[in-house]
Length: 422
Image (tube, rainbow, N blue to C red; front, side, top):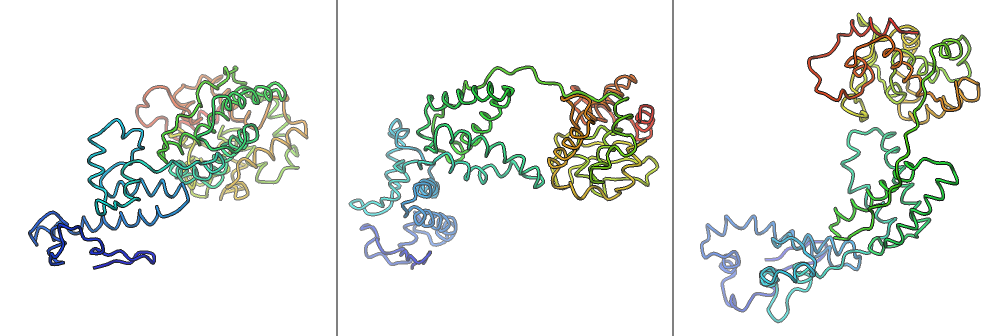
């Protein structure tokens, strides 16, 4: 009996142990299954056959000079033999494990299977993965983290990790991660300190970079079971006080942004999103992602619903409905099917709008940005004495306590928003 896998042929009788010499082939198989009963052998055969196939596949993968594939193959082959792969340094402390694993190695006593010996006794060397190679592996190993994200969200999730890895390589070189030393990380930290001072950056810029680099390296180390001790702790700078993004005053919005012709230089979709923000407080990315099914202009209370359609919401609290009032309702009526131009690129939207507002004197101060319209909406609700639960529901914020009941009705929300609408 034999099987052919990827051009290699394995025979069940090629190297029959001496104790089975002369045994009828059919009974040899029973003996190999640990029984002299044909019915019991038939019950055991499917599982054993599956394990044998797994073992052969792992051996084929292990017959390579590629360190990464060979290490993976060793782990798979050990698993196929019923063991977890353990490096030899750990096995040395457990003689019982060594005896069990040696007994499980296939082949004659005077010629044991070397691939199985390497897999079961922890002889496969972990691959010397370079930092750049870790980034390539990371996308596959961390693919669960992008489930439900839109293409634009995936791009924005990837970019800071790419940037962090490239920053590290520019300072310390593209070295194997097993060779990263505490001195390397101190050099990297010093580079960031100088950059912070030179470019007048917040400490959070460096800390985020440390976090993203650590995420990549630690994920690969864990998921590839490399067992490395990486010097990634103790790097963060003391967090400076977060800069508050200022809100626009109501008079500025009415006399500068909403005045006729003020947004004529913007494309019509970007201009409409600016005006929809005024009385909804929705995030630019939330408005850019609206689909026709999320825009309810013909409802008794015209409104938009922020939902996870083709994208991932910022948080579970972000799912909500917001009534349309005043200038926001009029702007939304022009785009009942949403803003196709920006549906896949909300980052591009903010860049376009902020550049236009800055170049046309529509930013109240140098610290203002498009996002300030969201804060202005919240400020008006606060000034009007709107209940905290309702304010947080409208903004998509957490409540810091359990939410009871369904919250305010759409009609109730409409009355609240309408009272402060511009």
